Length: 266
Ligand SMILES: [Zn+2]
Image 1 (cartoon, helix red, strand yellow):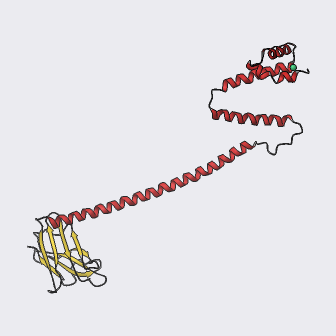
Image 2 (image 1 turned 60 degrees about the horizontal axis):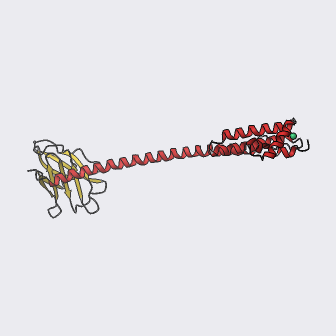
Image 3 (image 1 turned 30 degrees about the vertical axis):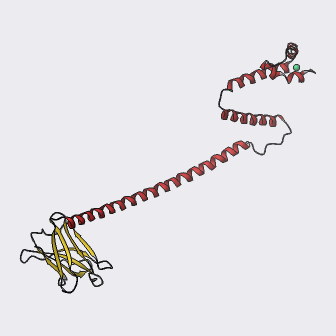
């Protein structure tokens, strides 16, 4: 029919009830004449509008996605409808390729990110373990420093002077607390020979009993040292004297040299 194009443009407006009364009447008369194309177009328009009404309340991203899908479907339908259309370079639409590419990139990133996170977690654990170790070391040092301070400050500690074998040389000082142990200190002490240390001995009161070996030390660059013996091998009551001799590195089970410093425990 000649007038069909004019009616076809109005089917959506008709389905929406948006036509002028004259236009509406004219279209209805045409439909009543039994035009199959226009009848079909009106049916499609009504269906489309019902679908739009149905999907309208949904969220915007979903609508956007639907829009894209519709575009793709229409493009596919058009290319199939045209007999001379070039065969599409790929049966897979571009958006799908782009989506797959994005997914692959994301998967690679994801795997890389997971490995990176694992590495970071392992590093963090190592750092934490180091910190715990450092703290334990500091706590231990602090504990020893506290013990030293207690021994030095407590009025119950017994003073012992260790005189040098060289009367002109420096003396050592010691303080013995019955509970906390012994601290021996020296200043301006000559350095022992290379590969040698100063070793402390507890000389027992009991006759014939061997000197008890104790801790070893080398003075610092200024000839200074502080030696803490937290558990002496003998009690104060059973000890006659403290002595220090120069011994090979690693110490000796009994003195191999005459004492360089010694002092009686009163
Ligand atoms: Zn028609």
